[in-house]
Length: 509
View 1 (cartoon, rainbow, N blue to C red):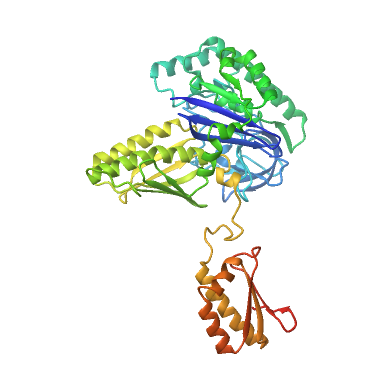
View 2 (cartoon, rainbow, N blue to C red):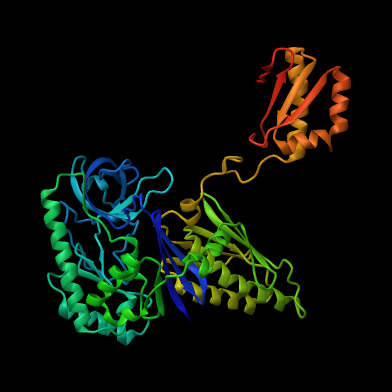
């Protein structure tokens, strides 16, 4: 698979696109005036403790208090920075909701200082979620200074390699710090691990020293900027090129790689053409497409993606594709094509929480299994944690996906001022009927026989053409005279009724 990283930098924002076989798969953006806080470490002060919900709210110096669940605080927690855990994990510290008889009151008190890290950014009206399990990511390892676990990325599947990596960490680690071995570490040796352990340990020492002297609430450590986070987390061995359109950032990137990953430097290219880099690589078009509800498949089928507060629902349809052979084969082909587009859109739109996929009904059990296997396989490329359930009796596939930051839609869009986010407005016919009734009410209220009606251009034109007979009937029945005018600046559902006698607007309840 051809993987490319395309970086666009301008005075407004930094944007990074991950392309797989020239298709946009993931998009990262950071506006120059943004308040990106994911991964930041804060020294906070407990503002309130709610034992009924097993949560605490922590003042970290931001407009909204941070949310801290008991599962994000170790049971043996006493003061900030002092706890340990022994069970072996395959990933970051496990945050089980099963906390036995422990109450958060036993762990935290109002006014207590605590070192926390942003685990999930603010979304909507909710404040950020934080964890007391600090993690400091490097390229190959993630240092977990508050636990003793050694975890291996689930994406490293070879058992012999997993054991080798675990033994290497046990051999090199100091102070019994916990570590997660990242996917990029597969095949790496003692030299790379020792260097990164040394770097991450020094970073933790700096954080600990700053936490001792700072007064809560305070920012102790912020994460890297977007482009350097991409170099750390995304620019892996399987990426063939890293193309960037900023000369300044290009020199910073190559200088960084010179000292850390010199064999990657040749893959970095400076883009110098006049055409914007995101246009040249088809990224802008793909972003606009990702904001649509309906996505057409190459076969003629399509998927519809609906995002609500509760869940994301995805519907698969055959559309224009009717096939030339067995209908079951047509359905299978459409569903398999949809799997690839669905998983790509999930990653690109960065949707999280509950996701329900309604594939086209398949009577053939082998076909269902094939579609499910393909879904699980394609989701392995997703860096966010996913959990997929099998087909339900209704033919739906339910899954969950880790949500750490606002989705693409939340980032780029706002609620529609016409429908207030509802997703639709009244039809032209409905608005016209409502307006005719409103004219009648205005006449009864004012008893004015000469009225001016101002409506959106589309509605005004409808009154003068398609509904001209209804307007005439209303004039005749009430013995009134109507003057109709259009105003393009009016909302489709808005209108004004004015008395021509005194030029005053008639307001209705």
